[in-house]
Structure formats: structure tokens, C-alpha cells
Image (cartoon, rainbow, N blue to C red; front, side):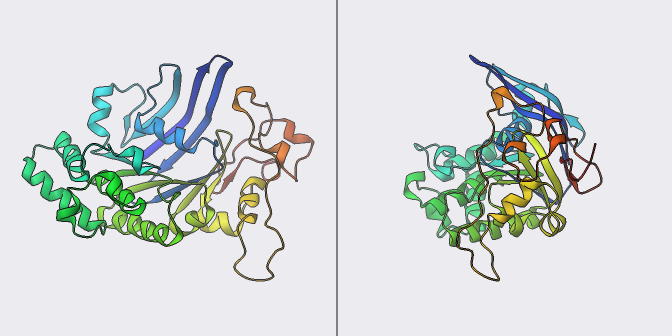
Length: 317
């Protein structure tokens, strides 16, 4: 479905060139859910914005290959990208309040996207908007289409954004932290909804989050990112049962245990992610890693054995 190879995204700033994404490669198969996890600033969203063709900053430089169903997207014209975006590749944005236009009703916005990609009457598009809102469990959808975004709760707004993303039955759905600002109960409902709709529409899903609990709930495979690079990737079962990269282990250690003795204090990762303006030549996680040793001054290579990790403890020099 999606094949990304050696993706590099850089931004020219007054301080110099910032390389936000450095050599990221991954695949997404039809019908699977790929979870992308990492701290803020790890490059999760920028990677998928590049896939969506939504990095329009004139100071941005995008290199590498992004192929959707065999079609190269890097270098594709804005007109051709608009034909794909929304119809075949759709995105659920992190903040539904900014993703939705405040001066139009949610029904109008959903119908407008449908009519932008399909030859359909305004009445038929409105009926489909009602059907979509019903499918994402919004009460009284025939009345809800006339509501403005500020008249909906956070959970209802997120459901409306999901309905809009699914309006043209996309083959690939990118979800950018859609549960971050929601309480635990609504978060669980949204995850169940995404999983149900993914099965119904048979879409491939890339689910971006910083929450390992969400990853455990929804993903088939997992890609862990740090400082614009892939730290580890593999199946969910392998990654949770046998994490290989110290960063993945540290993320898992920060989750409250469900069994055993209650810890006095949760473990945290010391320090902060590095500034990408002055990227180190060696392992980016080394300054925060309790397992670092002399070899970490060099750049680790991501292994390629199905469960991959960019660490010298796994792949010695």
C-alpha cells in the first residue's frame, strides 16, 4: 500500500539547516495498523505530513521516495496530490478544533469534501454526511449536520473529523494523535471506533501517538522514532515482550505496572531530546542512555531482520 524509502526532510532556518527526518524507511500493508510512537519532536508527524504532501513551506527540502500503490508522490504536482488527498489518502488531525472551519457547519464541511472528489448532488452528499455521522456514533446525525464545531464536545468533534476523513472511503488513513486531548473513556471509544471502521472499510492505518498504552491497544506493527530516525520497529508482540532498543525499554518502563508492587515513583528518561540543528554524529539517544558505551560515538545501523533496532547492543560493530 505505502512504501517509504530513505525519507529526509530538512528546513532552512536563520540558524542553519535543520534535518527533522533523517533516512526513515517503512512499509504499510493493506488492512494493517502501523503504530508510530515517540516523544514530541521525534519526527512522527513530519514524516506523515510529507506522505500527505502537506509540507508546503518553501524552506523545506524533501528527499527520498514515497510510493503509494506504486505511484511516486515525491515531486508530484499540487493538483495531482489534491486528487489523491482526501479521496485515497486521508488524515485525522490531532486538534479537531483547528482541523474544522469554525464558520461552517460540520455537515457542510463533510459534504464539501465529498463533492470535491465525486460527481454527486448536494442533497446526496448531505445524506452521506448524515450516514457517516451515524456510523461514528454521533447522536441525532440529521440534526448534528447543522451544528458548528464549537457546539460539539471534544469527543464529538473528533468523531466528526473521523467521519470527514472516511467520507471518500480512503485506502490509507493517517491518524495523528487523535486521542491526545480526550479523557480515558472517550479515548477508548475513539480507539474502538477507528478499529471498527478500519475493518469495515479495509483501510490501512498509520496511527501516530506518544502513548505506549494506545499502541498496545490498536497497532499490528510498531515503529519507534527518536530525533528524526527509527530507533526500533517490529510486530507489537515482539516489541512489547522483547524490546531491543534502550529507548523503547525506557518508554515501556515509564508505564504504570498492572501487576506486582506499586512503585514509589515511575521511571523517567533523564535529559531531553537533542536539538536537531546540531545533530550528533553518533547515536542520538546516547546522552540519555544508561547502557551507552564507547561504540555509541558512532552512528548505529538499523538492523533488517524483521525486528529491527538501531543499537550497538543488538548489532555490534
